[in-house]
Length: 321
Image 1: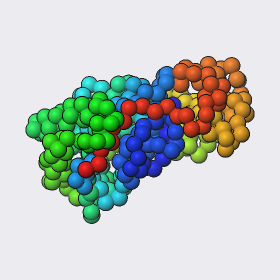
Image 2: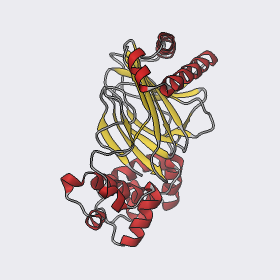
Image 3: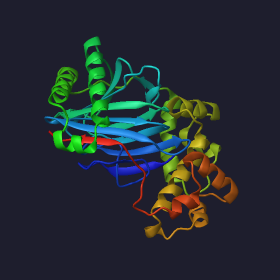
Image 4: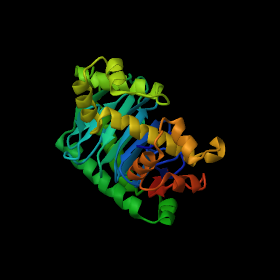
């Protein structure tokens, strides 16, 4: 698991391990990418502006979590063409004709499986309340979404020079405007309350908060169950509903991600591999190195030796109208 924290801005560029770049490149979005791996990161992303709105796509080779907060005074739709890839928002499936509608400054916690792709459509919506709900798309909206994604893929595959010179095709921008109008026009500005969540799903949120607050000290499964107020079985089921892994695997991977962040920022931290590992509660260096390589596809010493600015960049297309 590797976390990439940052505020998105208007620059292009996609990375999976830098806190200076965000994977969903929409102005105002606060996001982090939690890489569940295993292996090196490999993301493909595209962003296109259409009038006042923005669409972005993110396709991942490895499983991960897109977590963060949407901008104020905006409305966003998260969708996926596939109904079988098991994209989930807090255990609720997203895909096919089921999308996620997010209001102003709303919390996002989206699990993407290996090979998953999410499409994010965002447009200004003054007065839109904070909240989220699943939205059923009609057949025309699903068809329009598919045509938009095909056009975005073609745009992304074009050369950098062509993208910068010509920008997104006019018909693509028109199609995006039409889709946004169709999806957002009748959206309830107050949204609807989420359905009652299972106790084990509420427990996952409480456990994740506890983990963030205690990541540099020993954490046991009993600690997590006590903080979440549920049994071991309930917490295990809850984490697998959310992220397809158990709670202690989440703790270990999150610590590995923090190690990687520090190793990549060695100029500021003055790191060595062993000191960094111990700072994040790893005491057995052999097991630590094995786990690190299994998650990220390289040894921690390789990460440390990489220049701080040499983050892994992947394909991105950005167009401004």
